Each structure stands twice: as C-alpha cells, then as structure tokens.
Image (cartoon, rainbow, N blue to C red; front, side, top):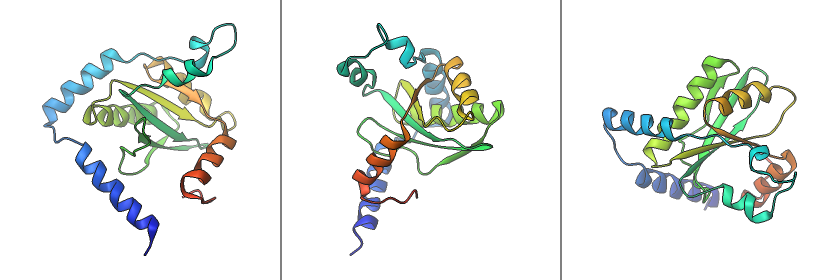
Length: 169
C-alpha cells in the first residue's frame, strides 16, 4: 500500500471539511474586512536591540494567521498556503509573475483563502533567492502582508523530516 497516497487522501478530506461554502457576497465582505485589518510586520519591526528571544519568534505566528510560502523565480513565483498546524489550505500552488499585476493577483488569491478559512492576518515566508525577492517583499509589506525570510537550509531539513524525501515536488 502506498503510504504517501493514503496521507494525501486524508489531507484532501480535512481540507474539504475545513472550507465552508460561502456565497460570493459573503466572501467579498470577509475579504474587505481582512484587507482593512491587515498589518504588516517584518522581523526588523519586531526585534529589540538587534536580537530576538525565542518566545518572541514563536508568538509572532498566531492561530488566526494564514502562512503563505513562496518559491521565488526570476520571472515566475509559486505560492502555497498552510495554517499554523501545517495543514495545506490551498489545493495547489498558485503561479504568478514577477510584476505588480502578478503581486496583486497573489494578494487577491491569499485574501480569498484567508476569508474562506477565517484567518485575520497573513504572513509570507520566502527564501531570499538572488535579488528576485526584493520587489515581491517590498510590495507585500507596503500592502499589509508580513514578510519573513526563510533559510534555504532550514527548508531542506524540514522537508526531509516531513516526508523523508529530498525531492522538490
């Protein structure tokens, strides 16, 4: 029996149970409320004297936060969303271009997911790949989404722990 396929099926069932069916009007209203309440933080805003206490980092992520992870590319980025417990909230990766129009599409996609899953804040985690992440990070922070940089080595290690695979897909 394929253990990985069984785990994926369970995850899909959990995802279907978590998403409530909302009408377009209700979803639009929720998105507007979330837009008004969005507040972006960066690590620099949160640090004191150039240092963090371990508990300060952990308390930054709350239960009402949608966590988006972005794979940075030169022309195209890919984004996925999870909750604080690591459950995937998106049905797959969302592809968007490295332009302000692409960033706006990504924000709209993340806002819709946040509204569907009753999340009030959004944090975007990304690996600082070359210089391609600068424009995305600056645009997201200026539009109310917190941005954190993630060490590529830590991403690799957590991926191996999660499914014991070194494969990217």
